[in-house]
Image (cartoon, rainbow, N blue to C red; front, side, top):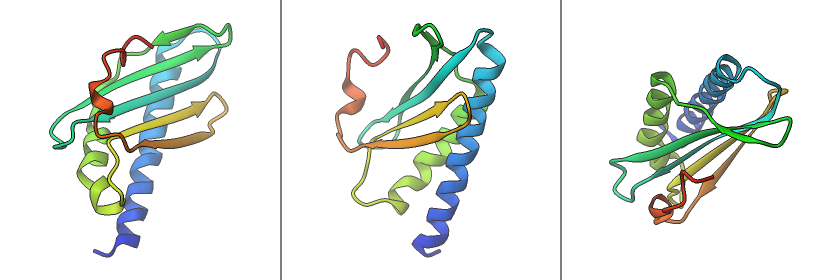
Length: 122
C-alpha cells in the first residue's frame, strides 16, 4: 500500500475519532460547552498510550470526561498506522474540537512527551 492510500486511511480514522469524541462530550456534558480536546501521548516504543479528554464549558471551567472503549479502540488504530504515514515520527496527538464541529489535529514530536508528570493535572 503506498503512502497516499495510508494517508487517506489515517484521515478517515481521525474523522471517526473526532466524531466519537464529539458524541462522548454531547452524551456526558449536560451544560453548554465551547470546546473539547483529546490528548494522547505514547511511549517511544509504541507499546502504551496515556490519554485524557477535557471539555471547556462556556463558563471557562475545564472538566474531565472519561474515555470509552470506542475511543480507546480508535486510538489503537491511529498508533498502529501513524509511523507508516508520517515522517518524522511523532509521539503525541491532540485533537481539538469546537462545539460547532470544527476539528484540528496537532502532533507532538517530543519522544518524552508521555513522561510529563502534570499530564493529568490540566
